[in-house]
Image 1 (cartoon, rainbow, N blue to C red):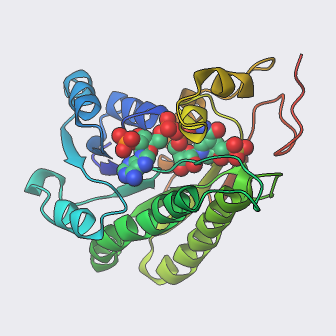
Image 2 (cartoon, rainbow, N blue to C red; image 1 turned 30 degrees about the horizontal axis):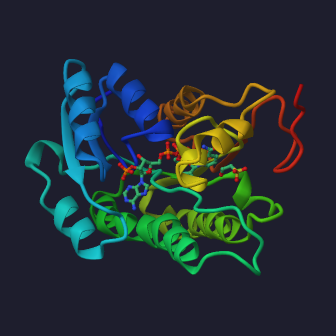
Length: 250
Ligand code: NDP
Ligand code: 8X3
């Protein structure tokens, strides 16, 4: 596939698995994240399969987002596919005792960061009248669960932004869709529980969660549909999961 994809949050989990699968399929990659050592390792692994360019920025930093994306070398400057994936939950607390810093992090990264990156990429897609944007939402953007409050709000915002993008970019022939996973075993829970690995592991105990490769596979399916097919919104859960709170644990 003669296309270039920019993937945010490529250093771990869903973003990394997507980068690996895209590389297998010859898609050129612009890989983004904050952990430079991981970006370097990924480039070493994947550049035997495809061309790879690294961008190190925090999606919260507006200036850096625009400066980095606007100064991509010629080989990578035409972005055909944008995967808005960077994000995380920070904390799992009732609204009365949640941390303001956690709330800021989730709104700034999951919502505002996604908007900054999109704003840096969309104008070139509009100019060319082509492009494909995949926003990674969540089951948390479809139903609110206890103590999910602000994380759920951030993912409901992603759901609304996904719909808004699709409506506004429709006249330019740009495809926009969301992939909304349930429980995927990544570093997500380690981040949510601030490095408490035992608590993070408990989330996935007693059932088979989704693996990041499962979501990568679906993202690849979405971007390889013929042009007239736009997968607008997908909710994907482990078989053991029925809703945000109902998981059939053994
Ligand atoms: P991981 O923690 O494994 O990966 C998160 C990625 O986001 C990392 O590559 C991280 O890179 C990047 N990231 C986080 N904060 C920033 C930042 N401020 N600036 C730039 N990059 C950042 O989690 P997942 O792979 O699970 O999460 C990916 C997406 O999937 C998120 O949007 C998440 O909300 C969503 N999701 C996850 C689910 C799950 O159960 N795991 C379920 C539903 C949705 P680095 O730290 O190097 O910057
Ligand atoms: C991640 C899945 O259920 O922890 O978005 O919100 S959940």
